[in-house]
Length: 194
Image 1 (tube, one colour):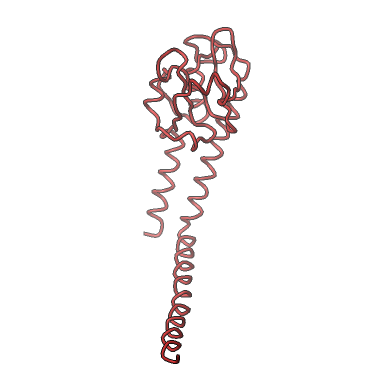
Image 2: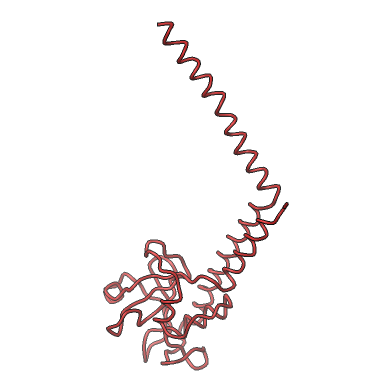
């Protein structure tokens, strides 16, 4: 019995001794990152991106009631779906998207619908062709868009039968001011303390 207790005790002692060293390594790494300001910079970037996305949705909601106009891209003249999305991204984030919905789909990153976040784009087949309609996801299964002639900018539920049958996919806009801030913070974090 003694023969089995001694090796077990030694293994336990080694495991207990090794655990604090790992904790110390994690603490040292966290302290190093904090000293260099990297963690703070990454938190700032995350906060800025979240604020910009919120600003985009809030700006878009400010245009509720603006009438639809084919080819329209301003509140004064009215919006069509892609003109509305383009104007919101340009005004809020300084990012210029292509003019047409299918071009916007091609210029953005495909994401799984389960990954949708406010500010992402949602596409629909409303004219018997893929990506013929676009809106901005606002959260909780809802999107804001400029739907059709005779209608106005409004928020709708993507899970309604009309929209769920025509859903073509979700896309995330990369680039523009939002991505420039991420790149700048990452570059600064890389060069800090070197």
